[in-house]
Amino acid sequence: MKFWMVHNNLNVLNLEKSLAFYKEALGLVPVREKAASDGAYKLVFLGDEKSGHQLELTWLRDRTKPYDLGDNEIHLAFYTDDFDASHSLHERMGCICYENPKMGIYFIQDPDGYWLEIIPERKD
Picture 1 (tube, one colour):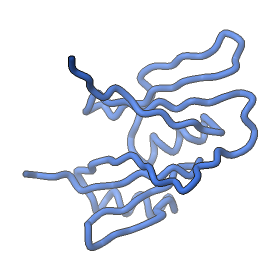
Picture 2 (cartoon, rainbow, N blue to C red):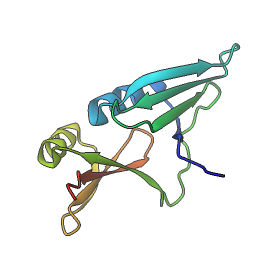
Picture 3 (cartoon, rainbow, N blue to C red):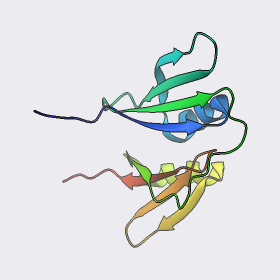
Picture 4 (cartoon, rainbow, N blue to C red):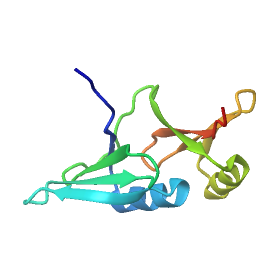
């Protein structure tokens, strides 16, 4: 028996704002959508056009208050092939929330407060 990763899910309060953020900040684009026939929810799966892994954004119509992320000790990580250009973009966007120069990484925060780790592409 084998298992493999397919997608991660994040619930979002404003789907359009989140879609715009993930496109600008990380180049993620919608690859599949599913919506309830009564409009109660919408799922949008984003892809990076390189790996097969997807990010599922879930929007719930009746949700009106921000999600409580608790201590927010989870995150998703992304490689970048141009760390300096990525850092400059995220600086301009104002979404860098934590930097660790000793480790050579930094984190950005999406509109709902989720942290996303940015890592330089490993060449080994």
